[in-house]
Amino acid sequence: MISIKNPSLLPSPQKLQNLCKALSVLDSILSQEWEYRYYSYNKDWSDHEEFFEMRDGSGNQMLILFTKNGCVINGFAHEYPQPNKQKLTANLPSIFYEFIFGEPVASIGTTFCLWANSENQWQTGQLEYSEDHSEELLKIFNGNPQTYIDWATEYFEDSYKESGIPLETVTKIYNGQTLTKEMVLSIVDELEDWEQLENDLQEIGYPYQFK
Image (cartoon, rainbow, N blue to C red; front, side):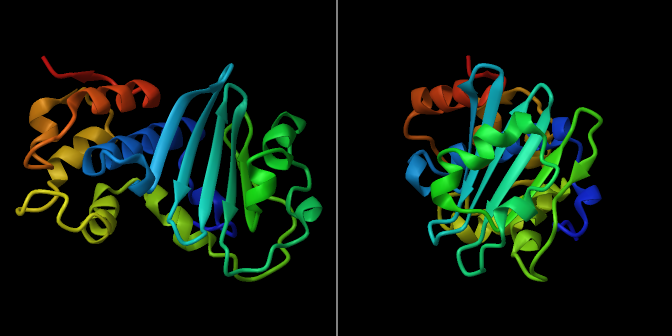
């Protein structure tokens, strides 16, 4: 299982970035109201930086920054003690300092931190506690579309078609295929606001063709 103790099991930063976009696309279809989504993505976080967020509404959050030089993951599990952040981020590249030690990360907190350099090697600092909830938060990144379906089937109950969330469509989105109306309507019976979805897809930076 992926965890801070097994960081090598994470996909490469590029594959992780594509997966984060896919998760955010799926959430934007299943919940047009942003505040009820688990996953969101902003390709224009700042110049040359893109941003992914997971929040569960119960205090757990995961923030990921993607840059041309690599990627850094900040995890916060509210039921676990926060370790010494200086030790946890030992050897963190300076290009990630502003993100990890600035806002909003500073106010949210940090229970685990992972980063990858331009050589795609995942690293972490000194681990202080044996439990940090990283395995639970990171398991969505195993690259298996069924993992998302299993989670979303429970979380978004009654928001999808009675036949369930189709594996074929989720797999297409995981693979970055251009989103069509047919694909959307294979997940939900109807979509209240197509313009809203287009805006979400533009913010995510995901291809679509609804005409």
